[in-house]
Image 1 (spheres, rainbow, N blue to C red):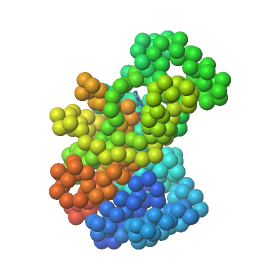
Image 2: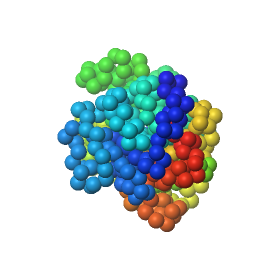
Image 3: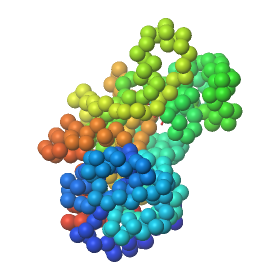
Length: 363
Ligand code: ADP
């Protein structure tokens, strides 16, 4: 539990002019549609921007106020926090915000009201906590192998830290595991410390669906907002050359995200999709009070048995929501109007203000 406590944040919120709230975020990741959505719902907007990276915000005209900093991580500096509070800001956290501000600073000294549950951010960042949350939520995840000697099927080997899947590889026997590890050590793609921390999990053969949900804490309901699949370099380029040439080029496959495609699922799979979202919300209520609130994403693979296996989750807005800055087929079904994830967040905040329950949505 961090040093920023709920009461302190609620005190800051009490001092805010509720008629004059600003929705603020760091200029990166999903900030364009977070800010655009906020404006659509009638809020003022502010972007904390690294010097030299203002162009998209100025050209798309999504921000009313700019707080320019030397580097992204300065968003947690006292003077920036003061400016944010002076504007009655509610900060929307996203992947880059978490990466640049750092979990420790967010938990210990970011004294600005944030949308959603700030304590759950650690649960998506640490692999063991993430697995614990998914197991508690009864979600089908890839089987984990604790020792290479147990490998009895095709597995994927992952290494610690977000490194865009660099050095990840596939093996089917303990011998193949050791062979590949040795060759990667020799090429210095990995170090000895990586070998000790190698994470071995069942390789799931299927199609990628990243499912974007919004849990409304006000309505106690999970909404399906959209889906995307990933466009990753270099793996998606590698697969465009014939298999025999793939063997010859001996390139190190990586999964660096460069973009996203919007996608829809077979309609018959949607009940499974809702069950996964509902289960996660139930699990989060038990493990991380006050539970999930706002956007989350389940990154999955759907097998040819039509089973959805979740290999990763985001407990905040995920980058793939950029595929529906206007609407997705699913958000259209639910709202019948243009509804991005950013706008959905702003709508929730607006509903919270109108029903005098903003405190439920803020930590
Ligand atoms: P990172 O977070 O380091 O980018 P991910 O865990 O997202 O790594 O994995 C990168 C890619 O590897 C995913 O986009 C997915 O296509 C693939 N992948 C991950 N886990 C599995 C798995 N268990 N089985 C098959 N493919 C997987």
